[in-house]
Image (cartoon, rainbow, N blue to C red):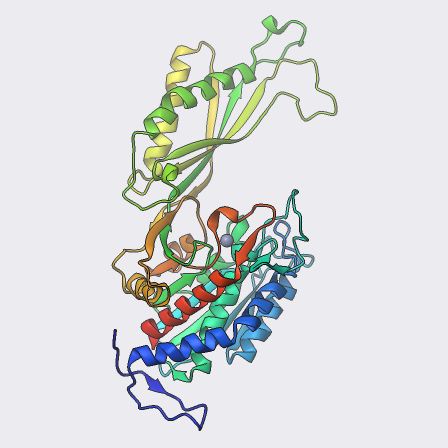
Length: 443
Ligand SMILES: [Zn+2]
């Protein structure tokens, strides 16, 4: 493909380029710069992995924000730190500090914002390497957060840097942000930036979130989330004479049976048109995330009939369903149980709702990334949607930016697992793709 009109700033006096140069030559320059910076890129990603930004509770956020901020500064960005003051999770012990770099182009817009979260989930057990060692071995960067998503953040920064080192003078403006708390909902991170107006439809045209969907996949959005609690009630009595009481746990058993035998099979009948991966997640799903009843949490179990039992359900709904329908369906199920189980008493309450989001597959952002993937890999990018949510929800709902995708290095299934890793080759290729997308979108 040939595009014209991209100007070159001659950073190297030895280089003489025509003002309107075929895109393919620009691309060669950019490719060369990414390859030349590959060691720096990997070292930087590894350095980020070595900062244990474990969430909860939100460790070492300031250190990580500063590591990102100083690298952005070295790469010619104006850098701003934005602490989520006023948010309850922003405390002296665990400050919620976000960092944003901005590199002004010839105009304020179009503006491309690259966003990555730098918090990571706790390592958990089962590791054969140091989860925070930032170890590079056999073509892989290992560590908690390597795939999800410190490699992606490094790719975003070095993509912008390769474009700069290639001497391209961009028409539009690029921003890179490192944000907190995605793993716990993102309210002090991307949601907060949106609420402060730093991410907003009138100033931000495109958002790319380099979450680990892989070099050949572009993620358009995600399904919805409806978490609800069901509490069943009984009447306590001595555990040696249960016939004198009513067990709330037995009552919950009826609910669980109905969910398994009635609700789950009907969910299997529905399929979304969204390209959700893996295949099993093309349908709505329901999971019991937690269950607690009676006095199970006492030091010793007590000899009592349970008078209360609560289950937390995790219903993932389709864009075609909507939360109202999912809620009504849950209520109708409980009413059916109540109609056939004498004395059944229950309460249902919402815990969390996240609406589904989806960027149009023919949006210019998607097209630009598809072309960039084709340029770099020679293959056609697969358009996918995520089974779970990520910060796209805040970009769409709060900032009202309608062109947002996730695209970044790493294998989605490895995220949150022991011995998490990101392939160096993937990291370099994704950086090239993002760099190409930058040129296509705001060049
Ligand atoms: Zn992530």
